[in-house]
Image 1 (cartoon, rainbow, N blue to C red):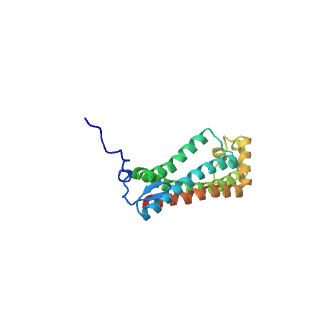
Image 2 (cartoon, rainbow, N blue to C red):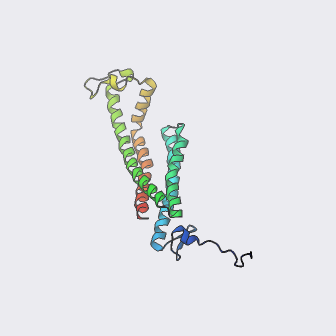
Image 3 (cartoon, rainbow, N blue to C red):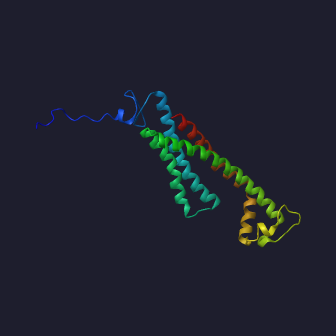
Amino acid sequence: MEPYSVPLQPANTQQQSGYPPNSILVYGLNVGGPEIAGLVRKVISLSIATAVVVVITTILGDIIFHYVSSGTFFSVVVGLLVPACGYYGAKNNDRTLIGMFCACGLCGAIWAVFQIVSGIGLVGFLKVVLEYCGPHGETKKEGGPFQCEDVTKDWDEAQYDDAKHLVDIAGWFITGVICLALPAFALKCASFIYGFKL
């Protein structure tokens, strides 16, 4: 048998990736026309920005609110999966990954609103608790909207002091929650919109 006389040619990666032959390069990736190129650029940029925000908000949350836990590393890893879906979905023209990126963007936007509302609600609730109740379920003032033994019976002095400290710095706490959740909200909304368009 005679060996092939035709030199090896690179595979047609444009047709394999699902993009037309007249594709445009975006971040070194072959993509379709100018409209798709703009959407791919936005999705990849949003993916990178979301990854940066996940890491920064986790670190700031640990520093500001002192809630470092064994789950911090896990939350960063899981938080980075969503931007990875956006990046690889745009890179490989994978509708499933783009769909996941889009859906998680919507869920993340809803979660960011929930964080802001619950942060404000928590401070308001603690103000009422501290006005009427003491640690170990003690009643400081009668006529409260709840029974103190139901709310603070498991609180020791240290937990009660933590609640007082949180109420004392309520302005900073609410500002911190808003500053951490607002960029995430904006990125998640944009991720949903541009992921859906792509």
